Structure formats: structure tokens, C-alpha cells
Image (cartoon, rainbow over the protein chains, first blue to last red):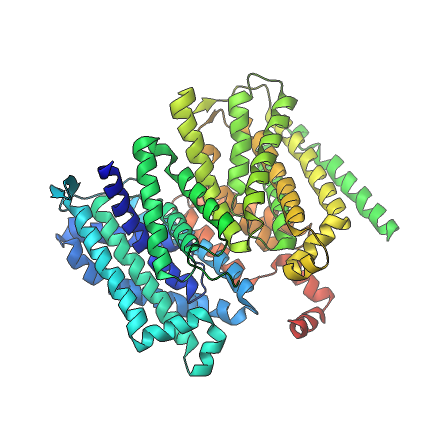
Length: 289
Length: 313
């Protein structure tokens, strides 16, 4: 039981990290990014390539991959998504357009990765030794990933609540129109936040690659889970993200160890629906939508 | 007006009668190609029936297609063919009803997310069931159905879909959906039962997709979950419907026919980079033709429509 809960918490921490980037992209930049998981897998491949080809530790890889992802996502927002933002008459239209555009992008990225790496599953062995933690045996790489996740989460939380730029970002999340009245450069803030979300998902990808096997076509599952966590927690809400991620991870671990590992996705969906039917705006979302 | 309807109707009948002779040409390649064309025409039109007027993007075409195909894989040899089709349609309608009732009451995004994962969810459930309960993964389909039979069934379904779509567009239900697509809050205030209208049309459209899957199943002799639930179908249908213009009944056909031919060519010529090309084509359509080919026709026939729209928006 303790083992299942511990596994669930670690899994949940990972889901929370994965979803943090999406909640920024969707909550602030208003881009419903369906190609989100593909960026995660791309980062995982980059980390794999650095580790097996150049013997670069994933922790060092993080320093290389994350800034690159930031720049790349910034470019994607500026070049690909800004025309859609300009064209959309209202928020719903932007939502539909961004869903369609990023859905197309999914196939471009996935196809590129399939062409480069093929359909095989990849993994590498990094910090793969058991350690004792709270009286249970866990893999060191998972524990290290959890530690970094917590650090990243804390840093993001402090940046959003304690800095001037973070406050501006939160203002845009609340109301992009009113934010302009207090001299916030909304297009700039949106672009930077979208890029920050992309950087976070790249970090998640590097961390995930240290302990999970992945293939070019497994991005969809990560997109799915990130979406579920974001909507369940309330769009744009960091705390909701954390709670929903942990709930998802816990339920998954419990079902996998006591019922059947093949039913985890079904449980995700059941939990998702249950939350939505009771609280349509998510656990921590405001009901004004 | 009624003379025009009679004209179009007789023209459609003549076209169907002419198309029914395609299998008589005796060319296996053209028959196979015609089957693909009809398959995507029906799928894209069915997709447009719901997503066109309501503007709810459904990414679950494959889920229903797969349910149909897999029903045939399981029951095809046991029961007579019409009964198999009936059960497949009922299953598809049931799944659509459950999904619709649980997600269509909420805002559009939740529906998109749910349909995005629905294919994967059903695939996982089928795999789980096959591994744990029936202990077979992958089934052979041995039914006495020829390619020509598949073609005729699809042709009949195509005719039925267009008739149905035309009837719905003229009914209260179709009008209700157009109002919902324009503004859901207004629709509610007009006394439209929005949930019922959305769920009803989603179910109809999903049932048609399920039937296509069931009819197409005998084409493969071996079916396993990864074949039946191939997410490329959702994607291709979405592209076709968008290219044609989903807000018109006849729109998706304009996208389905050229794109089926193009994909046939591309997948044979560039098997490895096919997905990338597909994604790029899709992006081009989203950016260049937001209202599809049908939108181009409309702009030509009514040049003032655009300006009036901008004023009201």
C-alpha cells in the first residue's frame, strides 16, 4: 500500500510538472496546444541523443534543452500562432483555430520524429539503482526527477507571485483586455508565457526520459494527461494543477496495483468526468466562464 | 424552389444509378479507389453534419469507425450480415450517446479534449478485454462479402447520408443547431434544448461513422485494435471536411474527393514522410482557407456577405 501511494505521488508530481506548462499556455496565452505532448517527446529524444551519443548527463542536458525549447516555442508563437490570434474575433474562435493548427502541428512533429527515429521504443539507463526512501525501495532516477520537479514548481510559483513580470502574466490570465489598461504588453506577455510553457514541457520531457521508455508516437498520451490535469485543476491555476496531477497519479497507481494496469486511461477519464460533472470549472477554477 | 429541388433530386438519383455500375467495369484498382472515395465522402459528410453547424470540433471519428470494424470482427462470422450492421450501429449510437450526454452539456473545449482521448480510451478498453477476458488479440474476418458488395453498401449509405442531412437541415433540429453554432446563449434564451439538439445530432453522425467502419471491415481479413483504431482516419476526415467547408452539406465532398486521390498518390510515393506532408497540408488549409472551398464559392456569389458579417461581429 505504501509503495503504491509513493509510486502514485511520484507519478502525480510528474503529471503536475507536465501540466504546468500547458496551464500557462492555455490559461495565459489562450492557446489550446494539442501538440504539447510531441514537444515533450522531442525533448526526451534530445536527452536520449545527448546521453547516448555524447555522454551528457540529463541534468546537464536540461541546461541545453530547456533554453532551446524556449526559443523554439517563442518562434512558433510569433510565426505560427500570432496570425491566428490576430484573425480571431473572440476567444472561442481562437480556441477552435488553435486546436486545429496545433493538431496539424502534432502530425508534423510526430512524422518528423518517426522519420528520424522510427517507431521503436527508446530508453537509457541513468541513475538506475535502488535507494531507500521512507522505508520503501524506489529507483534513484525517479526520486531525482521528483526533486527537480519540486524545485521547478517552487521556482515557477515564486516567479508568478513575487515578481513584477509574474504579476503581469497573472493579470493577462484573468483578463487579457483589461490587462492592457494597466500598461501590460499583452502580445509580448502571451508570447513569453507560451515560450515558458514550452520550456517547462521540455524540462518534463528530459526528466521523464530518465525513467520511462518512450517512442515517437507516445506524445498523444502525454497531451491527453496534461489536458485532463489542466482542466480538472482549473485552467491557469498552479495549485489546481498540483492537486489534480497528484490525484491523477495516485488513482492511476492504485488502480494499476490493485485492479489492472490496462485500465489506467479509463480511470483517468472517469476521474475527469466525475470532477467536471460536479465542478465544471475545475477543482480550483472560478465558475465565471 | 420545388422545381429546383426536383431537379437536384433527379440529378442525384441519376448520379447514383450511374455510380452503381462502377463494379461492372471490372477493374479492381478503380473499384478499390472508388471504395476509398465513398468511405471518406461519407465520413467527412457525417463529420460535417455535427461539427459544421455547431462548430464543435470532434476528433473521435476513428473511435466510432473502430467500434464498427471491431463489431464485425467479433460477430461477423456468428450472425447474419444485416444483424451485424444493426448491432454495430446500435453500439456506435450508444457510445456517442454516453459521450455526448457527459461532455456536450459543458463548454466546447471539454468535448474536444474528450474526443481527442476517446479513440485511445476505447482502444485500451478493447485490448484489455481481449487480453483478459476473451484471450485473443487480433481476429480474422471471414465473411462472404466481396469488394463490389462493400461498394454498393457504401453507395447506399452515401445516398442515405445526403438525404438525411438534407432533411435535418430543413427540420427544427437543423435550425436549432445553426442557432447554437452562432451563439449558444442566445439559443438557450430562445427556448432551444441545446443539450438534446447537440447530443441527438452527435449520435446520428457517430452512428453513420460506425456503419462505415462495419461496412469497411471485410476489406481487411485480419483486424486488431491498432488497425481498427488508427488515428490517421480522424485526422484525414478532419482535413477533408475543413478543406471542403463543413458548414455546408455538400462542402465535405469537395474536400474528400481531391484529398483521397492526393493521399492515395502521396502514401504510395512518400510512405515515410506521409504524415509530415499531411500535417503541412492541414496547416495550409487552416491558415489559407478557414471556410473551405465552399466558402470560396459563397464569397463569389455574395460579395457583400463578408462585410455585413464584420459589422455584426
